[in-house]
Length: 212
Image (cartoon, rainbow, N blue to C red; front, side, top):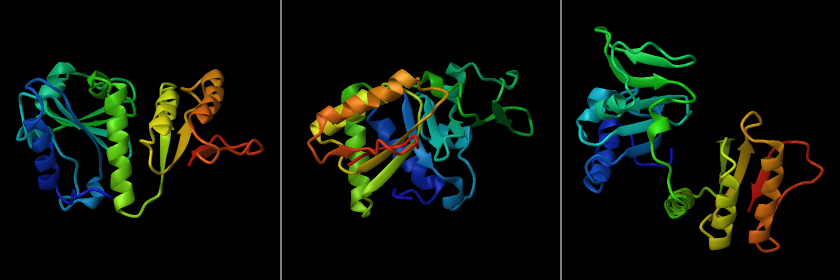
């Protein structure tokens, strides 16, 4: 892990800093915690996240993308209560009393669906900060293995144009979510770079594209 989080206490501190800069009612979203790499060796619960704020909906996604933790405010907005049955392909973890613990197992989490999308400038600022974090640790290549939104492609093109993307990025589009037309449009990203900025292998039958 490249970040400073080594415990749930560290995670809550960072979320608290974000809450302090976020207007009441605004969403706080985090990504990339790893329960196997923190001291407690468990997922954060709604009780943990409620100590950060009960006036902001908070949701954080596991590094795998398959588990999400949410506080009470986020669960309330999603309409998840002790009486909510598990939707198809979703597991709502519960306490011994039957109350949702805040931990949800799903690739398409119903709470995550409520988080407002970043606008272009916010996205590019986040990408720049992530690039700086990787480079500070000596990492020059990263990958995104779950590209399910065709809007990513023009965003990556804009990142290249602004030189916001400071490292090599390998993108893996999801075949079931990205149409062949959108997939082929990835090649249009190349026009934003110089002759050495991006490349792909026309003879490669794999589904990866490389941006350098």
